[in-house]
Image 1 (tube, rainbow, N blue to C red):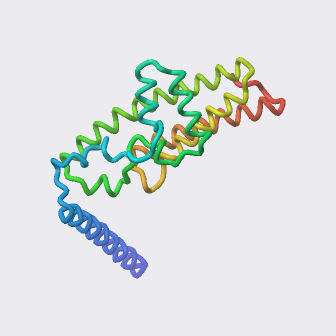
Image 2 (image 1 turned 135 degrees about the horizontal axis):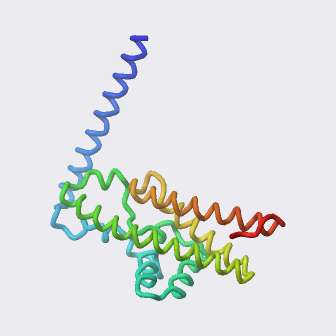
Length: 196
């Protein structure tokens, strides 16, 4: 039993040492590239892909926030229909490791930006879920399914090791809600209970 404890303890120490070395390595890489806290690309908004043409989730959230619900819905469905890359669905394209190696001041600024953007994303998701339910109530199950599949893709794109933990929480929530509504829609279409 003591031998197992010792092996686990050594593994834990080695893992911790590896993480510290990785953080130091990446900090050194930032210094080598001339990255400082005052550089514009340390802002969370600049962690976004900028070379892809067309609307991305940030454009869609901006449209939705200004009351252009139909335009934002159309653009979300277009992302899904065109099989857009996952980066187009990400408000922030940064991993937890890249986020963690930034300085405390930069992390705090980015954290505030992320929290604000994900609050908007949460409300957007709720509105799009309502749009899907309204489509189902109007007998347009195909549109409802398309909205829910686009939301599921939105959720999946924001989870995984290449994303921050905060993005992962919101991504899983969005994906889970979409899956639940898709299951209800499947049940209704197969002769089960109608969706609420």
